[in-house]
Image (cartoon, rainbow, N blue to C red; front, side):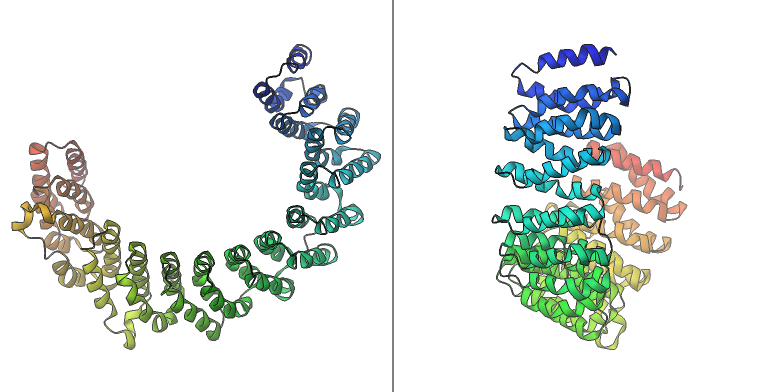
Length: 553
């Protein structure tokens, strides 16, 4: 009761002060205040206060109050809305100053479901007037809320009133106003959510938007096409919506093509697999587009489109596009294409014979991100069994040799990625191959005499990353014979970074070896570090490794 009387009276007086920041804060807090007025039946006492805030000249004050009032109306009963809110909305909708007319656009959709039939007619009348308002800000606010109002009106009333208004929006001279028609259609699909209703109401509007002269409108439509396709179902989407979407892919404006390309996979998913066959011929044109962003966007979709294709012809067309894209002058296009090839390698074993040959040039690409994607794509083919075919015999060995070379790359991300992918190869080929063929080659530059060599410490750090990765795929005996000695040596290294990495590697291999190895080899080496080490970070990881060793020794 004191909130309704004292606080509301105080705030009403405070509104007379010209302090916009304070008024914004009050507007935002009206929702919280409504919780302390004594229940929903008393919330209406706040409406006059919020009305005054909405009539303020400052836009941010009006917006804050309108948002709060919309929330409050949602909590009010129908009788209170009819008695308190409707008169307030009428003042705002017919106000001379434009700001209240902007604010009321948010409130009409909230009030409509709780208003009586005569008041609902008034709301529609006010809204119709706001949609034709001379002030562009009012008009924009009305169009932004048209979809919301439509969805609470019911299908019959939408057909009678709102569809006609939507068509008027499509005929607006300003493309910035026509732009809102796309979002209104999207909102209306929540009501007209099956094929028959969509065709009868929204389909003519969508067709008209697809032919709009403004690229902004066509771009907005391209972004929304998958939502329409989901509403109408795959049959109509493939028959009627897909041709519009294909036209957007060929649009003369790059921005529209970029938007359409970004929705390629979503659209084809909604239209089902046969749609890929219609899209595939256009991909070659897009991948040769003069706009770099168009090429980069379409290249990022190639892998999923190839996986979705249901015939060899379509698959081959997409593979041909990949062959062109992987040689593109732009590094992002090349990078995206290699990512796409990696996805294809995991899903289509038939791709190896076609795409393996196009990968090799990327191994020496000047951009390190492209080289990293090359490593991932190459190993993906190995995981898919590319080396088991007669035409690709010896593929894994060649790949291993290439990966070993990458251990000396001047970019650390490449060295680390090579270690990760070599571990994948060891998993494929087996631990015996890893310790007899791979490790001697990979670690040959590291010997006892080099442990004091400052210039070569990066190689030893890379070696430690490698053994950490491949140890997961080796037996305890193999680790003890071929890995543990290297870690012991690195724990004595003259370079702090190497000792740091070795202490962390010790934590990785301790759970994987025998108790005897832990007790007689790794623990003494770690204790020696603990006694003589000055660096706190190395000491931390050495002590952590010793703590782990207590469980395995």
